[in-house]
Every structure is written in C-alpha cells, then in structure tokens.
Image (tube, rainbow, N blue to C red):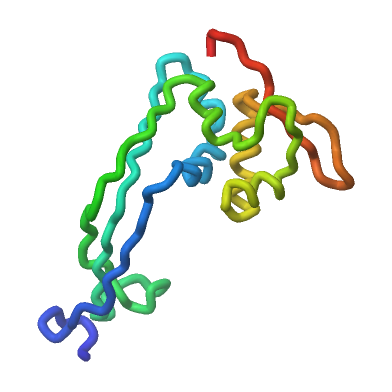
Length: 152
C-alpha cells in the first residue's frame, strides 16, 4: 500500500456506532453548561440513531488513527427522538423513586453507565436542582429526588 495515493488504497474498516438508547450520553456535553437547560424557552431534542463510519488506510488520516482517515459516515437507522422541554422532562434520567437515597456508584450500576458519566450526570442534575444532597455514606455523597413544582 502506497501512502498518499488514493488509487492504491483500500477500505480499511467499517465501524458501526449505535447511538440509540436512553440519551444518557448527552450529559457529557451538558456538563460544560448545565444552566443552559434552565432557559425558559429552550428545547433540547435528542435524536437516537445508528451511524456507520467507513475508514480508509491511505496515510492521510490523523496521527491518532495511525494514518487511517474517515472516508464516509452514513445514517443507518433512526430510532426516535427524546424531547427535553422542561426540567421535569429530565426526571427520566433519575432511576430512583421519591425518597430513595443513592450514591453516584449506585446510580452508575443501575443506569448501566461508567462512573465518569455517572458523576457528570449527577453534577448536571444537581445544577438544575432536580436532585439534592441528602447526606453521606462513608466518603460517598447521598442524593435524593427534589420535589419540583408545576412550573417546571
């Protein structure tokens, strides 16, 4: 295989990314501006999709991908949308009932996500005042669902 020539390169790999699910990964981005969801007329729409990425090994790609560049991305399937218009719509991400207390590790296990994403999710939910600190259990903080009014 010759580096830099398009004619002699071949398709290296086809990767399939499944973004369908419950929308939990949105908190990776919301952690940078959690108060954004408090804006009154803001509407967040999460589109759940499957994407296929085709990569080619011709040496022109990023050094992080060892010269493999992305040739194309295709939308494979559309699974639906989640609309987050008000703060109460974020309750779908709290997997515990009213007065039940939980730690970040318990949340991660119940949600089926890694601890890093669980910490980001808890941070955002605290900032938008959907959950509140309810004490400690050893070194871990306990949280519980906050009562919210009809306005939200």
